[in-house]
Image (cartoon, rainbow, N blue to C red; front, top):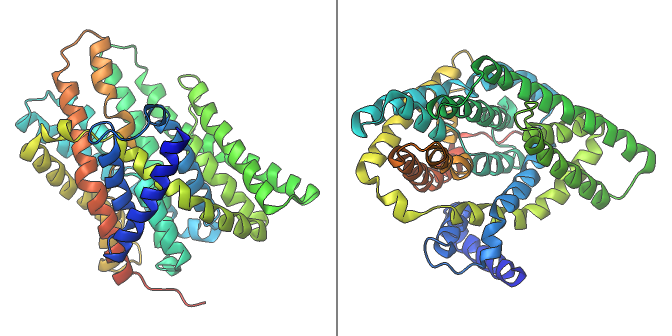
Length: 401
């Protein structure tokens, strides 16, 4: 496995350089590399590496979300609070509703099956969006109005909202005992608990770092290890206590930035170096989940549904920004930032099919949902990444020191 990983890193760095040279976002090239080398194409990666793909993806997400936390200042969060909250729900609701009706008309889905498909496709991808927003923060593009932070905050909560809605719908569809009130309550509860735990852990770490003053590298390793435990805790507490672990991870960085900015900047610099490896791992592993043959089954009808629903999503995104001081071009940038899909779709795209089979139901809708999830990654992840990078550099103003 280690040889396969080493080869993947070298290939990823070469592809990243090539795509940067031809002025296409590096992550697009790395994602394509993962698709090409994965089990559904050339199948050149060690199977043991594929088997731990989800764990590698989770580790890479921890790295970039910690970096995001170290860039989230309290003043900026206050500025973007209301629109960030709206962005966490309204775009997904608009898109999922459109998919529900479009799939009913074009795929002969029931409205409930269409709603399940909408919940699978409704989440924006933190894997694509967060690294690009971090780049803009590093370049101080759009930071005067807190635009990258707005997208970071909204997209992070968006995933929690969509996954809970999916859990409710699939439970109802397969005849499970679903406490809808409890599930709806778990949306704000998981967000609040995740943030609270992260702040508590961050505060304790800040006190310990002040007392013992370990080197920056050791501080980074401690925070990474604790973040892994937090993510694992979410899985262990599943169906017991709602807990958004990735928000907890971001909150650790946030509280350390507030208490000791020097620590935060040192740690962010260390994580930026680690991200060189994590980026390759993250996007190749997401790519390995993409079964092109499954995606092609949906063909033009699937693409039509996805792009039509994105129009409705864009309307929802625009409406969420009413009352802000953003220009039309800046609002359009945020609309584009809410296009990419990858992480959530790769994670739960096949879950409806598994649930339907386990319940002894016909598996055709599940197969079509999986195909649509894969197709959405193929169509929107590269397009969204390219659009965010190119359009963002054109319209986001660089803040003067």
